[in-house]
Image 1 (cartoon, rainbow, N blue to C red):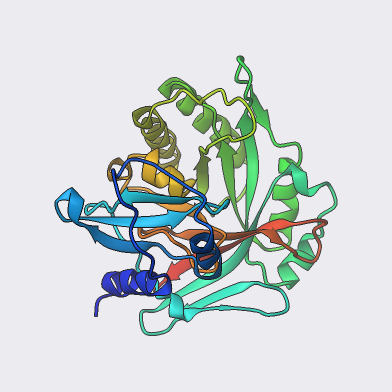
Image 2: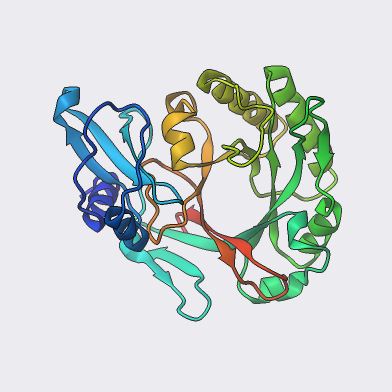
Length: 308
């Protein structure tokens, strides 16, 4: 059985829930016991929707337990990971992945911003088994001016993480409202990565802002997609590896994935098994990780590696 079909079957098997009725447009409800099941299993329910001419659909849950349904896009590369190969350390919660048959493994890592504070012992982070870190390089402010801001701890973090021997990538939180601003964000990032040996991904982060007024909240799906392409193309042209950060709701209802098949994704999903039916390279699986050398919680990630 090929890996794509196996992944879809595994995703479906983890949670046998009936499909949502009605339009494929975005909708959600507090699913009660269904959300409880999702919290235990994760995984999307992939099914054929008879009311949509046989269109394959998938349902998934957000972090608050709301349930959504979206069409499965045939032209977008599918997940190739066999999650029967996923394990978790009972003491630390750190996940591991090793698929010997298909020669796919995963490296453990974290992502960090100024919110993790000034005192990070990077050697202890590395000794705890973390192999890479994705640092917040900066962000565009929410306000009307949309000022570009360097993360207060970026310079210290990038220097110390590299000195400890971790592979370093960066991400930038965007609030671009024009293609020119997306290009400006890319050039700002490139200016600040060039002095360092950045070999990890350079990530464009656009996401839903739930508890504040977002400068970019009136962007259309087409605009968000265009800005991803503008940023990633500039990063790639400079010799770095671009990547796009998002969760499944953002992939299903905001970004036009069919226009973004040439880029890698960093996917956020805090259920036990990731729900995304599409391909991604990094899975952010927890926002409540505990890692020696860091005060407070930190995001935990697996970076999938093929042929290793």
